[in-house]
Image (cartoon, rainbow, N blue to C red; front, top):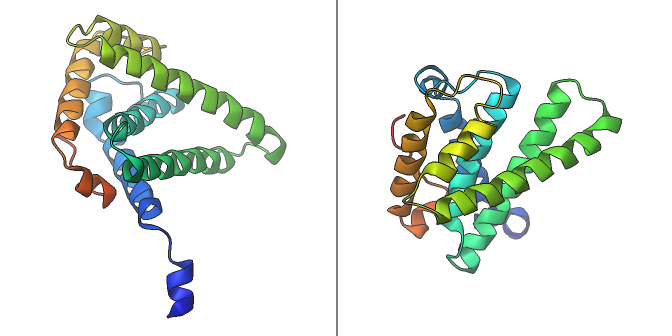
Length: 176
């Protein structure tokens, strides 16, 4: 029993992993690709997947140390998921580090851009421009306003969810 307690993952670690799994699940919803026109490509899925992680990180930002621990765990799990995906896609060990660095820089840049776009709300022009530039980079962006509405809806729904639920690794996403 003592060893079990010593080696049991911290609650924040478990919560971050659970939130990550729920973000991945939500980012795989077919409506995001059919109704909102997000490209069903590696790049398009990366953008949609990263968007959901950013939404969770945005919700956890500024909520104190327990939320910061969950946020860090979520980010660490996200990075590990990217690393695992690259390896599953057959990227060689010598290239993984370089590709992870590029993906990390891309995610950091996206995070800052989303933060700036969220700060300019209720004006949605910056958010729409960001989604057009990232999610729809190589695709028709006619559905971008619908994706903007989806992002705002998810962000509003996350804002109503108590910190305790998030710290328990629970999140409720609105239907797409």
